[in-house]
Structure formats: C-alpha cells, structure tokens
Image (cartoon, rainbow, N blue to C red; front, top):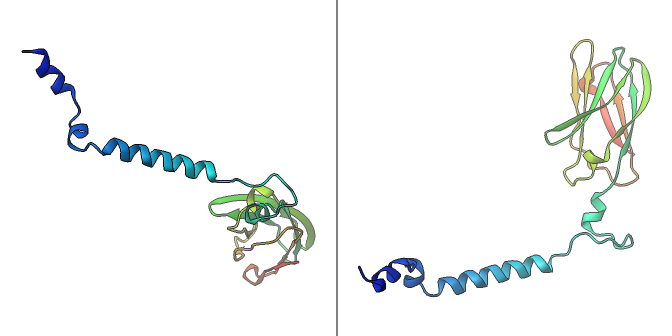
Length: 151
C-alpha cells in the first residue's frame, strides 16, 4: 500500500462532498454567539421597571378568617410546588405569609385549605397579586363556599 492512498482515506467524506458545510457551520456559530451577546438581562437600575422586574413582588400576606369549627391547614402552590403556610385553629383569625419563592412568577399562585378533621378541601383559582397587595381568605363552615379576595 502506498502513502498517497492512506492519506486520501483519512479525508472526511462530508468535507469532500459538501465544501460549504464548514462555512455554513461557522456562520451559524457566529450568529448564535452574536444573538447571545446582544441579549440584555434584567437591569440593575431600580428606576428602570420593566416586565421582568415587575414580576418580583415578594412575599404576600394572607389574612385568614376561619369560620369553620375545625382546625385547617392552608397551603400555597404554584404549578406542582406546594408549601404549607399555616395551620389555623377553628373559629379564629390569623395572618400567614406566602413566601416570595412562590409569588415571583407570572404564573400566579393558588391557595388550598384542608380541614384536619373531616377531610373537606377548598382550592382557589390562580391568583396573580401585584406588589403591595394582600389576600383575604375566608374559610366557611362548608369549605367549598370559602372565598379569597385580593386587597
């Protein structure tokens, strides 16, 4: 076997068949790099309020009025993430906090109430509170009649 035959065997077929492939790949890589370099993340200037900054609303206070005789647990959930935010004794009022990790999202947050004795449950619609707002949860004796208001 001669040396000329072994060097032609090592040449990649795709480079021989499609000579513009390398140029096209290089152009694609450069355009993706330029697009990534042009993207600006959230501004660090507090006076510049855009869409991304308005999402960060922080923790949300929830005033709970439990008119049910049974003790209830209150959960906040966003998507598949659920966190217990408080347990309220029967016929009492309490203030609980929805943590910022569940509220800093455009997807909103829902509340769920579970009666500890009896097994009744209530789930609110998805709520999208704004910065500075609070929620008022009224737990009725029949949990399905409970309501949530944004104040």
